Image 1 (cartoon, chains in turn cyan, brown):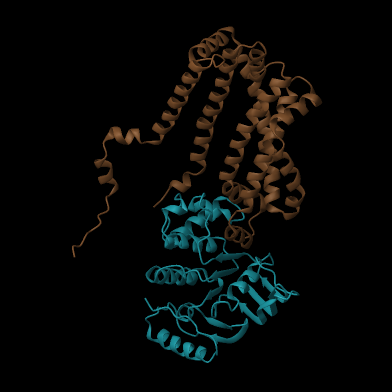
Image 2 (tube, rainbow over the protein chains, first blue to last red):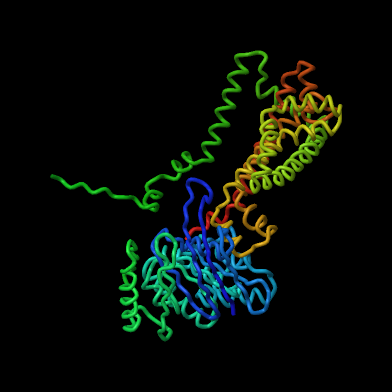
Length: 254
Length: 272
C-alpha cells in the first residue's frame, strides 16, 4: 500500500520575479492505502499543478512531498492524463510496453490482462489513430494500471469525452479499481463525478488553498443514478456553494 | 423566391463522372512526365538554335561511347564509394549533434554558430579547401561531402527534436521512461520527417560536393570524367555526364526517399 504525504506545500511560478504567481498555498494532506481521493476545484486553482508535482513533472517551491511503498522500493506511479498521450507511431501494445520497466513474458501477460479489462484485448496491434477518442483514453487507463502502480494519478481523464463514453469509462474505472485497489489521486472539476468515484474529496479554492476535506462513505459500486449518491452530491454541492468566488462546474448526469 | 439546393457529390459520383483518360491526364505522375517532355523539347530547341549546345542525339552517342569504353561504371563506383562514406558520416554525426542540440539549450548555444557557418559555406569552397588540405584521392571528396551535408542534417534534426510534443515528453517523465528508450521510441520517430528532410538535403548537397571535389582534385570518378570532357572542349561528352548526374539524383530520390517516407509515416495514413 502506498502512502502519499504532502506537507506545507507551496508552488509559485516565477518565484522571485515581479510576475510571481502563487498557485498552491500551504497544502497539507496524506493519502494512505487503498483509497480513491478526488481533488476538486475550479479551473486555475492548481489541481493539475499539484498532480504534476506529485508525479515529478513539476518541482515545488517549498514544502515536503513523499510517496512511499510497502516494499521499500521507490514508489511506482501510473498517470492518466486529460488526453490519451499515446505515441501515434507505435501500436497500442507497444505504447503499453513503452512505460514498463521490462518487456518479459510476465509484463506481456499484464499488458494483455489490462487491455482485456478495458475491452481492447483485440486491438493490441492497432495504431492509436485507428481508435476512437474513447478507445484511446481506455488505452491510457490500461497503460497506467499495467505498470501496477503504488500510486495512480488521474488528471481529469474523462473531461474531453462525450457524456455517454465518459459514463461508461467511469463505470469501467470503478470495476478495475475495485479489483486492483490502488491508491488513486483523481483530479476533476466535476463534483458529481468526484462523489461517484471517491472515498474522499479534497476541495481546492481559487488561490490554491484547501477549502474542505470531505469523506464519502457510500457502498460500492456506485452509479450516478443511485438515490444515495444523488443525495450526497446535492449535499456536497451545497457545501461548495459556500466557497465564495468558486463556481464548480457540474456535468449533466448522462 | 426560388430555393436553390447545393448538392455535394460523393467520391464515387466524382470518380464515375470523370472519364478514365481525363483522370490519368490530370494525375500527379502525368504532371511529372509533362515536365520531362517539356524539358526535353526545350533542350531540342536550344540545340537547334545554338551550335555550342549539344543535342540529344550527340549526347546519346557520347553516352553510348562512354559505356562501351567501360568508363561509366568504374568512375561511378569510385564516386559512389566517396559519396556513400561522406553521406553516412554526415548522417551519423548530424543525428547525434542534432539530437543533443534539440535536447539541451547549452549544446544549442555551443553548436549554433558553427552550424550556421557550415550552412553559409558553399560546396565549391569546401572542394577547394579539401583539395588543398588532402590533395588528390578519396579523402577530399569524402570530407567535402561530409562538410557540405552535415550542417543540413544537424539543423533539421535539432528543429525536429525541439518540436517533439511537450505532452509526450511529460508523459515519459511521469512514467520514468529511461533516456535510451525515450530517444528510440519518442524522439527519433517524432523527428523522422525532419531526419528524412535533412538526409534528403544531405544527399543532394553531398552529391554536389563529391562531384565538385572530383572536378577539382579527383584522380577518377564521375566529376573527374566530366572535367576531362570539359577540358577536351567536347561538350557532348560533358553533357552526357551531366545527364548521368541528374539521373542518379532523381533515381535515388524516388527509390530511396519516397519509399522511406512512406514506410516512416505509415501510421499516419492508418485512419479510422
